[in-house]
Length: 436
Image 1: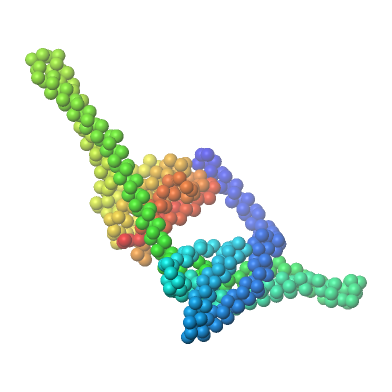
Image 2 (image 1 turned 90 degrees about the vertical axis):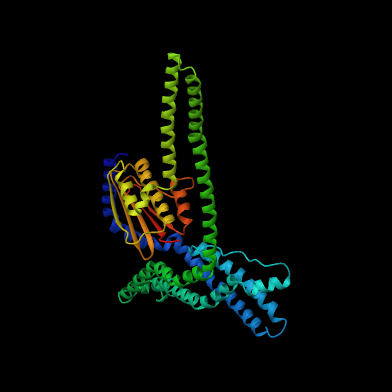
């Protein structure tokens, strides 16, 4: 697809969006009560009383266990209650994930040392279990509000909509001149309430979703530990891969050229032993010339290899390195930077490689006519932006260049965002810490 085709496609898409915008909003309002999300949220709300009742019974058990901790029975009872809270929390988490659309990860599994004493200590100190206990307490008013909202919107809407049938002695009485206006108004109000009910229930379930994400997912400390473990594993894998790449480059390129150079010099030495023979002297000159060319090529390969380990442009700072990189782009590229503070050397290297990889992707895959590179420092973070006017469709997929780039960024607790709709433009942002 050429740049002109992309612009025509984008123009047709925008015209169609403007033409259908008004009708699309009305259609979304009318079809909302029958959408899958609305049906799932209704099912979630219908199950809320049962789940809240189970949570309340568990809270009573926890309170009784706390009161009995003065004797030997209360301690194991409290430990069992906290362990049971994990199960209740897991059920609530799965329910919220399936029906309420809450994106929440599973917490770390329960671990304890061998023996009853270790198990009791681990259970009593289980942060996930206690967070589930707190969730059971705080979700009671949230569940009550959601159930009240569902009853008021859906129940009230159905009640008002059916007013002509249940509010009059007969249908004929509802159609009489005196009863018709009031019945129609009540039905219209009920229909409007039913159309707005999905949005009201979705809003009423916001506290439920907030509590689920805050208390039933991994604890902040666990998330940080898991992220650091993943970053460490990625850093080790990246270092091993880079060492293997350097080894292959040295073995297949530089080492082979040095062997050829040594052989050429050895043959030239043998020919020079017969310098009185003009023909052999000419062969010696040819071998020396070939060895000289090989030496220069080997030096060039070593220079490229060293540049791959650490770009020399970074010696003058990240801004200069990125400006040089942008200026060498085969397509027109604009560079804009605001870097009042210089990042750590490791961060500079990652930022440089990220920008180089993203620009290479723009040139190879996007079909763009121009690109923009930006770098900013704000609130202790380094922000990189690469934008192009290409065909779009970029995504972080397994095996793609962006997937490997995201893995490298996560090794320093960084993030990457990709916005690349079909037809473009593509905007990729990278956030990195200034210092490790």
